[in-house]
Amino acid sequence: MKAIMVMFDSLNRHMLPPYGCDWLHAPNFERLARRTVTFDNSYAGSLPCMPARRDIHTGRYNFLHRSWGPMEPFDDSMPQILKKNGCYSHIASDHYHYWEDGGCTYHTRYNSWEISRGQEGDPWLADLTDNVTIPESRNSRNKGWDMHRQDWVNRFYMQEEAQMPQAKTFARGLEFIRTNHGADKWFLQIETFDPHEPYYVPQKYLDLYPHDYDGPHWDWPQYRRVTETPEDVQHMRCVNAALISMCDHYLGEVLDLMDELDLWRDTMLIVNTDHGFLLGEHDWWGKCRQPFYNEVAHTPLFIWDPRCGIMGEHRTSLVQTIDLAPTLLEYFGIDLTPDVAGHPLRDTIAKDTSVREAGLFGMHGAHVNVTDGRYVYMRGAARPDNSPLYNYTLMPTHMRRMFSVDELSDIQLAEPFSFTKGCRTMKIESRGGEAPQEFGTMLFDLENDPGQENPIDAPAAEERMIGHLVRLMKDSDAPEEQFDRLGLEA
Image 1: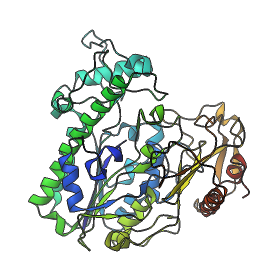
Image 2: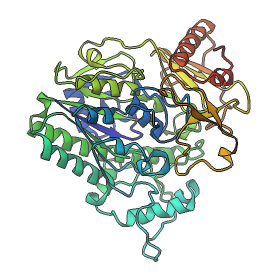
Image 3: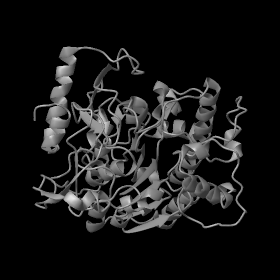
Image 4: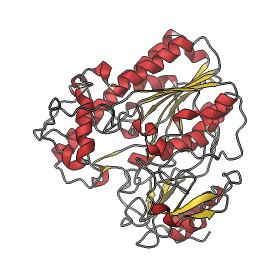
């Protein structure tokens, strides 16, 4: 038995043909849907990048207790559990956040790992000469100048497609498959940062989407409200689409190799993402600074399980990122640890068996959201200052830096949570939270308003969704002050 996970970052469900998009060129995603089960009701758990990956490793939500950060000493990591049980685990990735302070303990959970450098502002190569030409661009207003310049340094050294991180990552993943396809009991994770912004993509993919745009260079949207023209918005959607088409090409190489080596008979295939991205929908760019509308939280997911052989079918059951770890562990015949909150999807794949009534999703300090597939309830903070809010961690690290001495000056020790194996954690005040609170609490009826344009006032539905929210927070052993922050009774 073998398993391959092909993971993209910020891959929009609504941009893929299997989910109804009729203008984006992605024939291999269509081919994938014919060979797998397509999940119509898949949702993120913790957001954004590294919190989602902690969900994938541990099978439980990260965001109620902590923001962005490394794996914790008490975490049960799926690839590490595989390793301990004689199943080889390997990751090939260009997702550079793995190699920063805030993600530095994930890749070492695998038996082996490979990295391709150069995505976004990855501090990769140093060029202090005048070799790098930075064009007149909106990007310099979008990001810090150091990151913007580093991005252009990186681009200078990968002007051919074969030099680009995604191409290198898939080449390394395919090499692992070719080398080891005759062996048994391995898990391979091929993970690319694409189609995450910036949308640096070869011209041949851009040529698939001709459109009118005469502004300055622009392929890196800032996380803020849309102030651009409709033509500008269309331009950004087209360059995003071009990068998705590049992703489609390399997905096709994996499918080709599975065909060539007849891996479908004994190899699980999972194709997934961490979250989506707003490309002007709801008048917003990006993620994190606005509520997690379905464009961000409602994710694409495709799974082939050779044990049941179901292909070309859709599943409507509500599933989440936290279900991936238990699905892989069950597939390899390994018992789940007591801390896993997700569910193996074997029966859901085979016959659409439901595994949950409702699921949580969100980011530390922002809305706590819950969906039952029909409604999405976004519970906002009860106070303007978003208090009280704390990080519970033994690894006090932000995305690109450790917690400051000032942040650590008044740490407390918290009592153990149900999943910390008796360990007490640091309790560190989170100053201001991670997202603005001006949106307030909102309830959406997806059946009548799939675009989430009009929040509704429906007391009975809201009460039912609050019930799901409180129950799931209690099941996750959420800190007591999270209920207080949201104005809820624990």
